[in-house]
Amino acid sequence: MKIAIIGTGNVGGALATAWSKAGHTILLGVQDVGNFKGKELLNNTNTSVHSILEAAREAEVIFIATPAPAAMEVAKSLGDTTNKVIIDAMNIVMGRGPAGFNTTADAILANTSTRDVVKSFNTTGFNNMKNPVYGNMAIDMFMAGDSDNGKKMVRQLALDAGFAECYDVGGNDKFQLMEQFAFFWINLAMMRGQGRDIGFKLLKR
Image 1 (cartoon, rainbow, N blue to C red):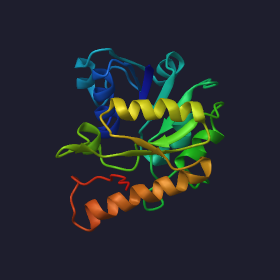
Image 2 (image 1 turned 180 degrees about the vertical axis):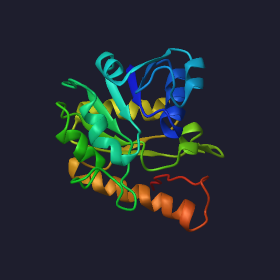
Image 3 (image 1 turned 90 degrees about the vertical axis):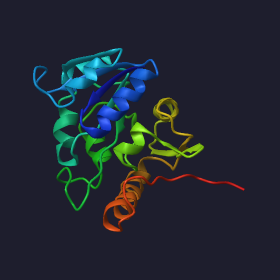
Image 4 (image 1 turned 120 degrees about the horizontal axis):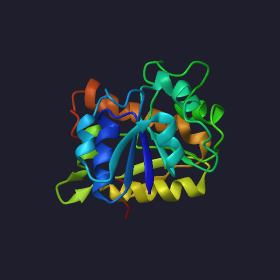
């Protein structure tokens, strides 16, 4: 797949590297192509840097991992996103998010032309994006959204990043649940002293 990554910090950088290794084409979308966080990502194979508009135009999938307050501005900067899949990896934490919206995914839907928005890769830390393996098993990823096509692509990208499975938790009405799930991880890891090296695994009998 051709994947535009908007937000080249910890989460975007970790997945850019994982997906590059899996053979995907990575288009880093940045505000200033001469000066941006994550320049080392250009050392990965199949990776190039572009303006946000150009990266979004060339991509099949647009992955957004910027700070949540910027969600609306970023969405507006993508240009024509008709028929493109957008993956939202952002979270509103402690009330800091796009004004007037309960979730970042809702802000994206309201400010782009695509209906294929999937919320995923937001429920765990970037360290688990770099290495989702614990002992002899990999942790799981989760996703929500109305787009069946988007979910198929997200599931494949989760597997390509090394997660054991990507579970579907529902439609657009579960966007907020996904952000609450993220805060649950943050609460355990940061506020309850469990540390970042924790992850979630769905077990079945």
